[in-house]
Length: 276
Length: 322
Image 1 (cartoon, helix red, strand yellow):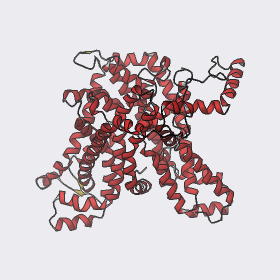
Image 2: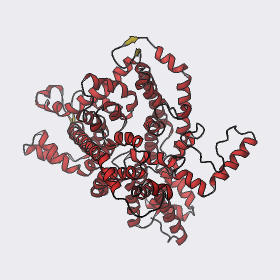
Image 3: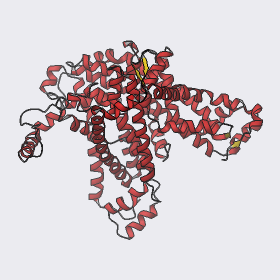
Image 4: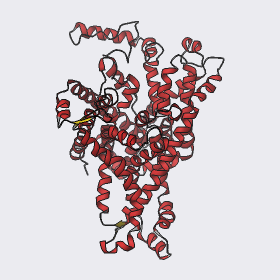
């Protein structure tokens, strides 16, 4: 970007700054890894360097503590992501292509929600779920999560569909494609990149959801990861090794997800999935 | 693409369109608008969160405006909000530094590396921080004590107290401070939390703005002899004003809704002496501990109005310079 060749010092300064910041950002990883192999006596003697022998059994204990909750969270996040994307792709097709009577009223109702914080809703939402007998159910939680999560998807997708060339749809329609077929064969292939970025955002959002599951779920075996870890740290205070191993294991599903999708994600956000 | 107009008379052909938007619209009205409305209604009731509800008109709101605890909660969240404004700086600086790296390959790699910490669940990140704050085994105190910073802090503390700027001896040499247990240290601990305060989504949003700056702008600046600091203040900062605004909105909502963080770090009464009782947590506390759900709804509505006003001010006064 610059026309002049920059000096070595400037370059060193820039890279040095970034590496310094990265080092601090990665500190939690380091701490988790180091402590996860320790017994408590090793931990109190040398807390933040590797000590031998490694205690691999900590990982077994850690897995036993969080395994089922990882499964719950995967279920919750996958269902909520899939539901929110299906319904928002369908609705944005209509909002982006047609001006139907009362359509703009619905659209305004959706846009206002972009600004409305969930905070005012929490208690009445809990009450509503109680009335509908939706407490203590992961499926219910994922539906509620999807209804909130779809709003940002609707906003982003509608803008994209509105900018798509009209000819795509005209051709499909002449070939006799129904609305649903147009969504599947025209909209989804064209917006694939943006859909995957939104999917990751939804997944991470659900993965980290805490307050609603905390107040809605009663059954300990149904708790998603965040709530389970919150409860666990009270029970395990004295066993740092297995606790840190459990923390590290909790990051694995997202490591797998990001290993495959990081490129889309960075490109999607950088190219303005979220416009100003 | 101009949208196709469907007239009311054509509805017999186009009615399936309503079917397609139905799931979306139905869920929004059921799980977002209905609770919002019923919350507004319940804010005029004394309600225990169950069957028992008595209409008390605006008494919840009167109570809210005279409740010293709520007033204090707003002061505390105000302090956190000001801190959060400063905490936006590292993300902006990091985005600009990444943008100014001249090699395409490295620019890409830095983005990748900064995204990696996103894999840690938010709760794990928080619990690790809680562990950092631990007075005996925590990393923060080990760092302060092994570097001798603690005795320096103790000296400064003693000097300030002697000079009359405050009356609390918080740091004593050789005695590990209890970050989450000392009412005087809770707020500093919450402000340190998340150091170095890099939000990767924020950085990516800034980068998306920075990348739209044409290189001719930089060339002109170089010909005029503008230095690196000048480029930041005259080119980069004004041209990413839109992105700053987006991140500011996200930050406002994040600070006011981020009470779960305090719930995990300090418990549902806001830590020692309620030193970190923020409005969101106060609402939660009233609803689920004190069983005053009507009052909690009123607090929720007040918070909602405040967020609307703040985002409104943001959109009006943080103008984009074209």
